[in-house]
Length: 278
Image (cartoon, rainbow, N blue to C red; front, side, top):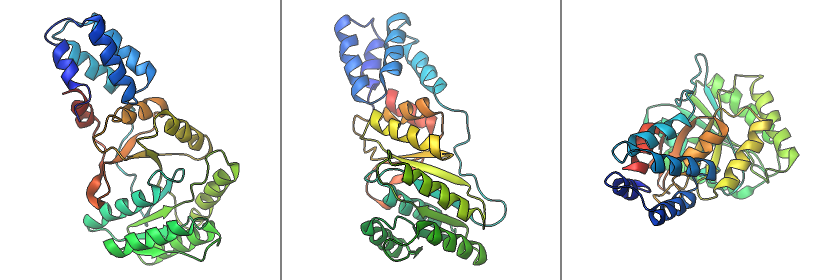
């Protein structure tokens, strides 16, 4: 990724000029790392010795991240249930399929539930993904009750011994309160059968600070347990992962970097920061 590394290597050899600092500021801002963190990094560059600036910035970025566990909260009895939430267009349905593929490759039995019944394309898309990765997809007719489908999925996953139940939910505009009510209903009906272990918010890595605002809205309505950032394809937007977790203090659990099934991987904070800085 090396978004900041070339500049930091320059700063490690000599003191930064005013022109260098301004150019570096623009790189930081364009990376979507956020104004507050950007200003803190610039202040570090100004006051740190050149031989300690890299370690100082590394420590500063790590301090922004949550200490919560990044691993999936696995069920000790019955299927591990994961709700995938977020607004339309963020890669939510694709991320649900990629997550199913990730666990399937690890030898787990996965059941996908297409609970975004308000968008027929989402159901079709998930069914297509399911066929590709060899995972069963439970769906209903268009405009059927998403909570009812999720409830049926929970019963099947429990009764038939699935390891994971992954539920793709609707993602209409995050300003619509009925969407939040619907997500809460889906969680309630599933928990009549088995606990919900994870509620993962999918954030489009190219949407910048607006994506963080969306995540905050969801977090006030449902108990988000983790975040998945999509579309981090090596572009200049890599700072959004740090900014998101710093703003929400909800752990990033997976990141997606492309369209291939294998492009969704667990988030490694140390490795990610190292890529940004070196």
